Image (cartoon, rainbow, N blue to C red):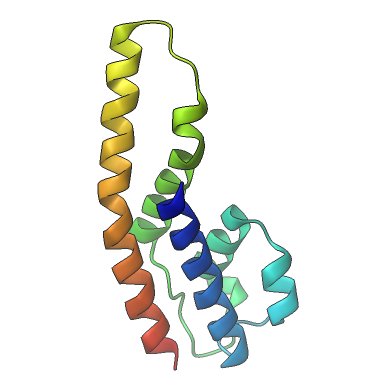
Length: 114
C-alpha cells in the first residue's frame, strides 16, 4: 500500500509541476481535484497540453500506471482456493517489483518538466 501511495503522490507532483510550468492547459487546482486514474489519463492526453508540448506520459507508461494502480486493493480481495491465493500473491509481487521502476520514471519525468 505504501508503494502505491508513493507512486500516486509522484504522479500528482508531476502533473502539478506541468501545470505550474505551463505545459498543461488546466490549472493546478483542477489537476489536484482529479482522482489518480484521471491524473494519469490527463498526463497522457495530447489535448490536455498547450501548443508545442507533447504528452509527458506515453501510452506504455500510462498502461503500467493503471496496472499498478489496481494493486492497491489486491490484497483486500478474499480468495476461495489455494490456486487463487497463489495467483494473487504472484500478481502482487509483480506489481510491487514494478513500483520502484515507476518511481524512477516519474522522478525523471518531473526533472524534464523544469
